[in-house]
Amino acid sequence: MSEQGTATSRRSLMSAEEIRRALSRMAHEIVERNGGIEHVVLVGIHTRGVPLARRIARLISEFEERPVTVGGLDVTFYRDDHQSRVKLPAGPSDMPFDVEGRAVVLVDDVLYTGRSVRAAMDALRDYGRPRMIQLAVLIDRGHRELPIRADYVGKNVPTARAEVVEVKVSEVDGRDEVVLDKPAG
Amino acid sequence: MTATERPPAVTAQVQAPPDGVRPFWRGRKHILDLDDWQPGEIVQVLDTAIAMKQILARPVKKVPTLRGKTIVTAFYESSTRTRISFEVAAKVMSADAVNMTASTSSATKGESLRDTVHTLRAIGADIIVMRHPQSGAPWVVAEQVGASIINGGDGWHAHPTQALLDLYTMRERLGRIKGLQVTILGDVLHSRVARSNIWGLSLMGADVTVCGPPTLLPRDWVTAPERLPWKLRVEERIEPALEGADVVMALRLQSERQHSGLIPSVREYCKLYALNSERLAMANPGALVMHPGPMNEGVEIAPDVAHGVQSVIEEQVTNGVAIRMALLYLLSGGTARLDGE
Picture 1 (cartoon, rainbow over the protein chains, first blue to last red):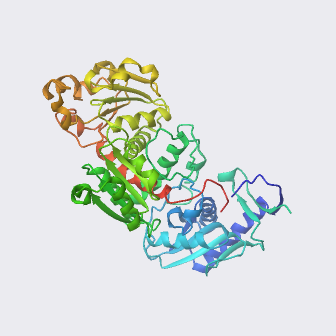
Picture 2 (picture 1 turned 180 degrees about the vertical axis):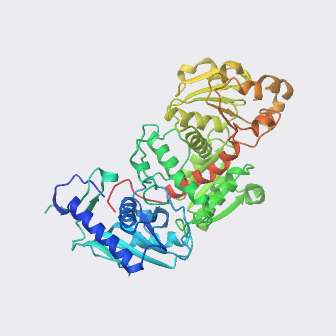
Picture 3 (picture 1 turned 135 degrees about the horizontal axis):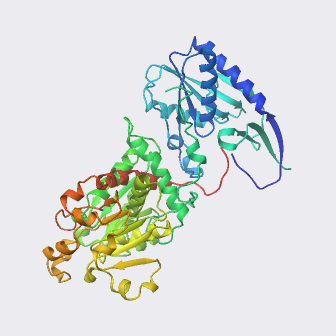
């Protein structure tokens, strides 16, 4: 997410409490849709998808009273637009389990063009063949460039392309909040 | 593994960087030497190589990142490690790797370096990795062709990718580079590995000592060290050079230069400068033993040290692939501007 110097107006989309409630609802939906959690693994997409996946996993393990497998995936090297993006150091992927034959729930903070998700699906393929791939996102802001939709959505937010949705999570940013930045003028 | 017992993987990104330097990349076109680099750029390459090394450890060692790119290795001097590791790096990143060896190319028919490189570009090379016996050759080429040039070693001058893999190996094993005592031992005069390492280590804040027979040290390094661009300790005796070292890097005694009268005999050199277990004991306990390869075992390094517990020589080779993947990736475009997700 960018910290642009230009004048922008900011609007809060979700508070910490609203994020907590949304994740809790998504956790229940994941269990319900999959008829339990036995063959399900959660995989967060770097950077902010990873802590969100861990939180959902923690919620599920609390009310299902069993451990939930969770991993993290950095998709930098699978992006089709890496040549036009900033070269941030890629984070490590953390997939210490077999995805073969399991239902993988990808978790990301914002669903926008769909390119990160496509890259994540390609990356997953190099770890094995999941039985099914589902997608959970905290925010769906529209403007898809690929035929991709989310199975679990925290909040749908209609946006303009010029706007920026910033998801802050305490594990990375020190606080929980979702804000919408509108460029001035 | 469960949700409750796993440490959060993301904390690695918010932790303070190990050497107090933030990664930074300004979009370089060529990798020629480290002499005009900033510490942040080195950190960016090392950090990127961590992710690359992880790819190399997977069952499927392939990412699609550089699909459609052509990488040519043009070597006018022999090489095993550098050339093969660039080829492997290119293939793991899904680029097409083509090898041109000067001894079997039109270079033997008298084609100039410039014409050869223009030909490689015309054929469609996006990145040319070149090794050449003449110092400065990659700079000349970089000015003339549109392709990215990576210096795979030029004369006695520079070997930046080797220096980066050495820095990576030190940081991975010792957790930092800043403040390390690094002793570079042997034929410093002819060593491009030593020169690039001195640049990289100095930028990252390590303390470098070079040691070798007076005839194998650059003369002006001994006579006028204050005029050098780095703070360097120069020792002609091995004992004080090894004392307190965290890393000992032995250099190959370049056999092609052994008959030029710079050393009395290989046996004499071996007696005074070979890295053996008694001498290694003078360094810090657990000091890393490194060597850029190829080794003359029994000459500059004793076999039991080369293959001993303190040796990271094989790891250097593995890390070389990861570093070269990182460099190929970073050369493939990208901006210096943050424009959000």
